Structure formats: structure tokens, C-alpha cells
Length: 516
Image 1 (cartoon, rainbow, N blue to C red):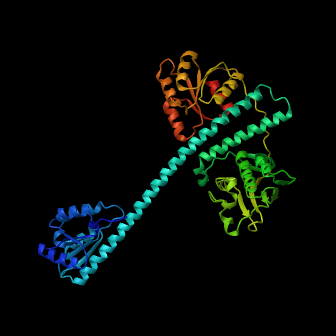
Image 2: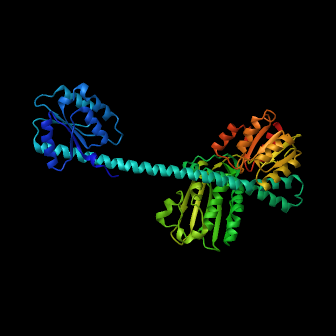
Image 3: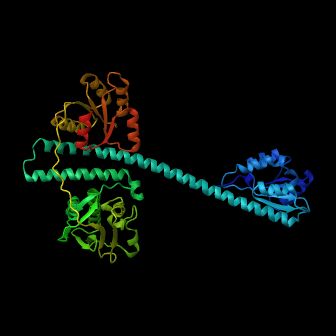
């Protein structure tokens, strides 16, 4: 940052006007810009316009006279510390000098008569120190600008991720609704169809959790992702991860070899999160292995730990990069793998999740072209039993008149069909204004209301329903792709009773509709 010419001048308040003129002439001859001040008020005014230092005689620093100067100095910003050069009377220390030393901060005492070289040296030293302060101010200002730019970028990133999450969740909701309809309608009449439906449902839930991670990417770096631990069979988790990654492996024509321990191994953890760990490792192996490569997944026990290894014969990792592969946005070889894409957060997420499960993960490679191996170690549970998931049965709804408001026709119609299968009387609206008309004519008990609609959004619809004495007691449930904390706070302020994020768990929704 550049400084104004006034910023490097020396303000002079000498014992007399004549002394000031002589001092100014002397300093000017050495290339130092000066400004004479005839009063303390003028001195403070000139400080406001900029100065490198102050040269003042002690007789101007009695308690009453120095108060404006002391007040100005006390208001300096953190980067500023104006040097004060005090011309003291000869002889013993005076009370004015002692008090000035104590209260004015950056003080240098020059006893009169002052040698010319001493005065010049002190003035030049003060100006150089002040110049460094201006440099610091420039650095601080630049850093502040950078911080503001980063905050602005973070804000735009959060807005983008929230919008992306909304757009991704919207298609997930009708898919899950349609799967529920298939199950409830008795359309699953053979083993293959039941299996296919289970796979689709599992993957929709898995994708929904990945969307949640995307929206909370900052939590990944802090390692505060929520995990819901239960007793798990490790082999089932590894097989679920293989199933999740199977399309990637098959598309790249990789040969997958599985070498699983015969003995059952149980760990404590979140099934979705651990599936995510091993799926990410498999996807990473596939990404950095040439088409038609070999990938081996191994499980074994070592003492009190369960070991899962994912090994490939891919491009390998240079020794210098082994310690960096788990860093955020790190990609081993952008130049040759650009077409494979990826954000570079997969291995960072692996490390965070494994650590949260009390385990460790390490990367091994003999070097470029020699493949890689990622080894996950998790603490084993002893004398534990995996809970068998009971077949889920969704009970029918009591008599309810439900209005669904959603600008997504697939989402609204699939949910309407599902709720009708469960026994509800349902009406459907695709805009805010139509919703208000339906509230008057259909007289619903509950309104399932999307928020991010064009024109009149869900918040405004909710406010208008609450403002009407005839409809203010209707139960309002936000069913939306917007799931940030701010969205939930706005829902409460608009009058919603509940806030569900798409795709909503059907049993949770059924319970809310039952008591509404």
C-alpha cells in the first residue's frame, strides 16, 4: 500500500517559534519533510492528516496541554505506534518528561542542547520505524481483503451447495416414493424383483447420505461428521461396498478378487459410513488403475483388529506423495487421470470416517507404476451379535385429508400415489397460488409443502395460511430439498410445524401424519 506524502513528515513543536524554524531547516537539509505546529490543537489536526513522528519540547507536555495528544495516541489502530521525540531541558529529569514517558507510549528523550547528529539519527530512525508500520498496515489491509474474498467465496460456495443439494434431492424423492409404492402394492412377486428393489432402495439412501456430506463438506475437514454406531458384520459391509462400486469396476473392466476371512468379524460403526469408506477405496483403486486391471479386496484378523485391504496394480504413488494422498483435494496424477474426474475429497473422507470409528488407514506403494494398497484397521468387538433387521412394515394412515404442494410433478404425484395406497385422501397442487385455493376448497388436515417453488415460495404460502383465521390451525409440514440450519429456522418463523428433507423417510412421515 502506498503512503501519502504527509505520512512521512515530522511534526515539530519546538520550545519557541525560532527554535522550530532552525530545527525545520536543519532536518529539511537532510531530506526530512517537516511541519511546524504552533499549538497542541494544530499538532493533533496534523496527526489526523498523517505523520511519521512528533518532535515536541517537554514544556508543551504539562498534564493539561498533553491531554489531546495522549487521547489521539490512545485511539491509534493496532498497526500504528507513532514515535514521540521529546526535547527535554538540560539537567535532572523533569516531571513532564517522566509523565510523558509513562503515558505517551513510543517515547525517545533527547536532552537539550541536542547534537545535530543525534537529532538527525533519532529523526531518521523514527521515520524508518514508521515506514515499517505503514508496510504492516498494507499487509494487514491486503490480508483483510483476502479474508473478505475468502468469506465471500465461502458464502457463494454454501449457496451453491445448498442449491445443488436441493436439485439432487428432488429426483431422489420420487424414486424412493415409487419404490415404496411397488412394495406396498404387492408388485414384487419374484426373488429377482425383490432383490433389485432392495438394491435400488439401498442406493437411494446411500446417495442421500452422500448429498448430506456434500452439503457439510466443511465438517469433513473438522472431522465432525455424525456417525450412528451399531454392531455390524464386517463382511456384509465390505460386500455392500463392492455392490455400490460394482458399476465403476465393471465399466472399466477391472478384475475383482475377493479373499475374505472364514471367521465372522464384528465391528462397531455406522453401516452407511463404513460402506462409504470401502466404496471410496474401491472407486479410488478403479480410478487409478488402467482399464482391465486387477483389484483385490482382503479381510483378515490381526490381534484385536479387523483388517481390510484394497490393493490394485494401477499407476502407484511416488514415495514423496504417500503422506499427502489423504489431504483435501489431493489427486495423485491430474495429467493422466483428468478424464476420470473426482473432487479429491474421497480419501480425506475415508481418513476422517475411519478415525471416527477408532481405526486407522494407511497408503502403501512401491512407487509409480507398481500399484497401491490401502489398509484399514478397525477395532474388533468381542462376544457381540449383529442385530437382524426386521422386515419393515408400514401401517396404514388414519383418515386424513392431505394437500401436497410441489412444483415437481414427479415428486408430488409419486408421493400422492403412495399416501393414497396408505389410505389417505389426497389433493395435489403445483404452485403456491393453487395451493391457497386448494386450502379453501379441499380443507385439508395437513399440508405437505415444498419450499423452493417459483413465484410464491413455500414460506409465503405458510405465512398466508397462518394469517387466515379459517386455516391457521392446519398442520404444516415442510417437505423440501432445502435442509440447511437457516432453512429450518425460516420454516419455524413462517409457521411450519415440522421440516423434513427430501427424500423423507416414509415411516417418519407416516408418524407425523398420524398425529397431525
